[in-house]
Length: 440
Image (cartoon, rainbow, N blue to C red; front, side, top):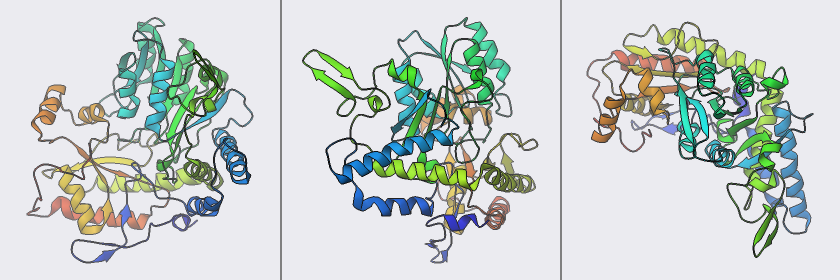
């Protein structure tokens, strides 16, 4: 199937500093993906019908409210929950907001304990540091999590851990964590599980029910802009019972049934957690992209992306001076996320050269996962701290992250350019310190 034909904007040429025009290559899908054509079409088709959600009386408001609510059903179906009454969908603006909402809603006091890992994106770490006591399971030398370490930690704290929050797939190495096995452990020790699914949902089928009740996922969060609907939306798919029994993190219009001089009556979920004017276009775009991914079929998606991932890793291993991170021998538990460096080349400069010389978009830095990257680089906490305080920013990587529309032809261009930069003399470095466009 010609997957490229499904997307908007990916073949628009860009002008390089040399003056040449070229079709760019986006290997930075782990940050943001391009929109599906069906997604931009649904925006265009509905722009004339825009009206208030659950406010006012009139055709446009009624139309948008019904469509808005119908999207919840599509998202529940995406996660295998269409026949269940246990979960609901709370719309947010991003995965980060979703995790902050859960941290501030589910954690009752500062003594509550949360278990997470050293693999996490900051969005699935920092919000929990602010509300409770966080304990961490570390990674092994290749960057994987050992599920036995999770159980040992649960046993160690004797039921004090209230929540396990873990990434579904790493944004640095692409490792896919066994979320249903972790869920079973969480429930065995009377904890809840939250899965940060930002890097997972566009690449692998997720059935939140698991194979049995103990394997079910309590809360799952994600952002649409990493799943071909970049219009500022995300969601929490979570258990109604826990959400109904808690006070919302955000409050204002639309989340209350009644407000009195000295009392508040909250609405039920999901509206209880959706104060303010909703992002109608972001929501319909998100639901449409997820519906299309289902229709394409995750077997097709996984087969295509796995082929590209293995092709790139096997050939990058052959390029002199290229350093790869994570397991490059057994790669079945990795999505198409490849972190690397080139010996004696600064990571920021390498990424900029790939972009300015051949129009290849990559990510450079520590990918908002500093503790994990430092471990993969074998950098001590003290050295990492000194590096940041000094402003040198010597430690980082370059990341290639794949999408469904990427091709083997693009992979060959990337490999040729990488080999050229990795082995040419006089690299003509542009600067010492990454600036501006390098986000850590």
